[in-house]
Image 1: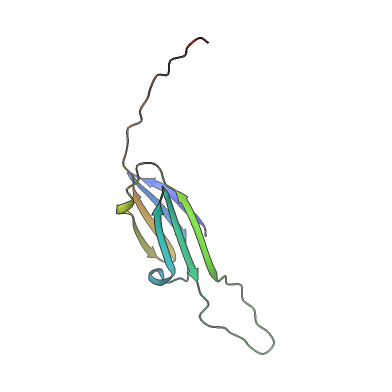
Image 2: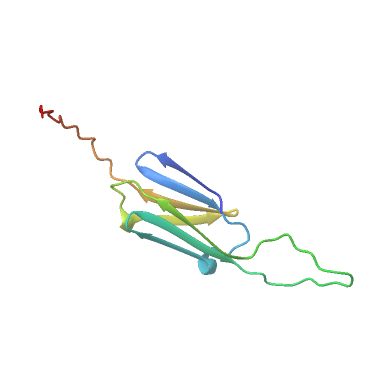
Length: 108
């Protein structure tokens, strides 16, 4: 599954191409240990066999993708939507100020 990810303000947006699936039945999205896990399954509903052969180039089966999340993500506020064959997952990220510390060097 092909994905794209980008930041939109304080939200990480992950989009995944998933044409031909039922998002309510065929998609499972979880967040654990700083990783967004997207799993889906595309099932073949009808088989078209005709005299002289059968050919399909469609892909069926399960597929998954793991996306590492930046620190400060809010796992409880993750949302997902599906439109026109594209799954969009939005993950809020707390903007944490970068800390800077001076490290002293000693002579050894």
